[in-house]
Image (cartoon, rainbow, N blue to C red; front, top):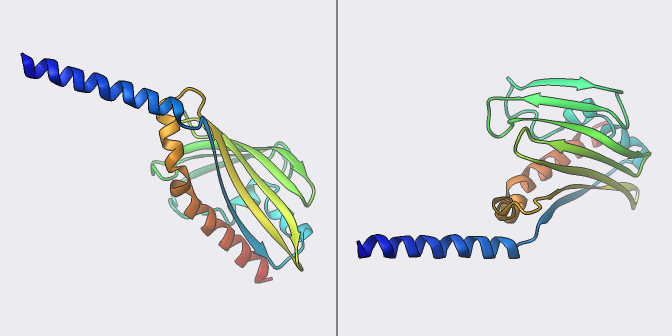
Length: 177
């Protein structure tokens, strides 16, 4: 009986510690990667401003050839939308829709990952030398979701390498022209 009480107290202390630390963690997080592409912003922008165009170089496109995609709305700009469904956990299911677009400067989209939450992605184009620096950001707000806040600590490691790969693929696509 004494062991059960001790185990209960230890468990209770761990749960309280989990909650207190979770409340102290940031409620939002942003992952960002960038690359310089040897092309002007006007040549880069169309490859970021439509969901079909993004899909052509997306690092997630090649993970599961059985993924089902659906494209809706305009080909380019605000309202361009893609949804996907895959049995592969790395791909999962979700949707992405462009919500803001400023020609040759910025594209913002809203992402939803099924029932797992969502966030926003943002491409920022900045002239640099004779080319364009493309910054790709993903931001999410976990609110009071304590588990999400812990996931936020790992998010850069979870998607950062994919962002690097995608940007390298975009660079190769545009510079091979």
